[in-house]
Amino acid sequence: MTHTTTDQPARGASGAVVPVLAFAGIVVAVMQTLLVPVIKDLPQLLGTEPSNATWVLTSTLLSGAVATPIMGRLGDLYGKRRMLVLSLAVMVVGALVSALTSDLLTMIAGRTLQGFAMGAIPLGIGLMRDMLPREKLGSAMALMSSSIGVGGGLALPAAALVAQHMDWHALFYGAAGLGVLSIALTLLVVPESPMRAEGSFDVPGAIGLSAGLVLLLLPITKGSDWGWSSGTTLGLFAASVAVLLLWGVFELRHSAPLVDLRTTARPAVLFTNLASIMVGVSFYVVSLVLPQLLQLPKATGYGLGQSMVTAGLLVAPLGLTMMFTAPVYARLSAKYGPKTTLILGMLIIAIGYGAGLGLMSAPWQSLVIAVVLGAGIGLAYSSLPALIVGAVPASETGAANGLNTLMRSIGTSVSSAVIGMVLANTANHVGGVAVPTMHGFRVSFLIATGAVAVGLVLALLLPKRSRPAEVAQHTQLRASSQEEAALANAEEVLRGFRGRVLDAAGGPVARAKVTLIDRRGRQAG
Picture (tube, rainbow, N blue to C red):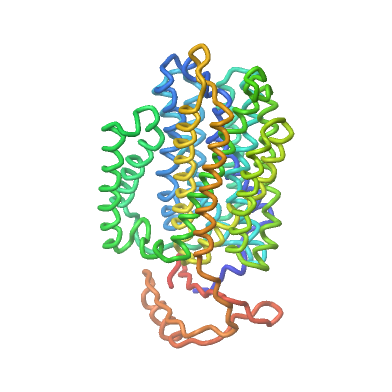
């Protein structure tokens, strides 16, 4: 039996692990914005009504929300790399299914499989925690967390270029190719984590959470089509509340729950997850508003008359800035802590949207808005996994980050529904076509500013980071695995242990954690 800490990398880990995992996150995020350039053409391309065509986007969102916490928990139990490769493989299959069809139902099935890959984000963060040394962990998790925005931002111009010059099915072939490349790199470079959580997979909990999320997100994404006061919308909202409450009661009584609600209720985790919803809302507003503003014809009096590709290029700095913010975050977080960087990110987002209210009259102004918001969202997104990782045990990293990623997805879903409703209700109808107005764009920016203000308050409520102590307090180590005799002996030897963990230079390692690993590589205590 060995003693390991997160301060030392796992055996076999190389310097290429971080970029490979970040690339996997970017590939997964591409699925979310892959069809944005052809949204308005989907009804014609699929031979269906506009209300039916929106299911091509909604299905990906729903499956991603369901898969994220489930894959995180499976990774904790059976291996994070294994589940990461599985997520990417399902995505590749879904992309190929979509590439080979123009039938609506088959397309929805393929898009549902593509959304399944969203679980790769928390799995990548969990792998980084398990194998990277402390000094590299902050910037690595920041890059992985920001990959959602990076992939979404970079996909817009690339997908627009493909859609403008090639058959739209080529988008899916490209996505499948990226997925295969990501799988190959992961298998070649990323070692499996030795960390394992105890217990078994909570199948009833997974079914309950999936049902509750579908019942919640379905009316959020389709409410504008069905009517927010319709019986279907209100009935699904009521059903989601009932199912999620019953699921919560079950999880609290379960010995090995899918989501440890007691851990989730800790202030550090609870306020981080609530703030994540607000960050998700603010991120998606700019993704919805700027491309439309840029592509509207100048004849409207406020449209900027740019092509699909040019609009994508002008919005792309949103993702690029988020990517380059990761090393800046690492320095700021090391000095001031992730809570401070989250607050700073929120403030920059608020400044970006506030200034954006008056910067909508020229293409270069959209570029400025994208850069400022990218920096703020990058700092905020980068802070979230560090706050979660610092508040949960190592054996729950995947599930906890999966839940946090889910919170961001809920934020983007709410943002999509609310902003879509605002733009529709403020639109001018010209020749039977709804044209968004400048008033609608500005109201959308004000909504984003309000969401950031709420997120800022939640960030301020986060508890302060405790000061690292040189000498560890009395810790009772509990062991449980199949090697009961050896572990019981270890527990007896270590009972009442007091001491320090020293680095190679002989200095104390602040806030070190000692983990017992049995001979099969599973966490024992």
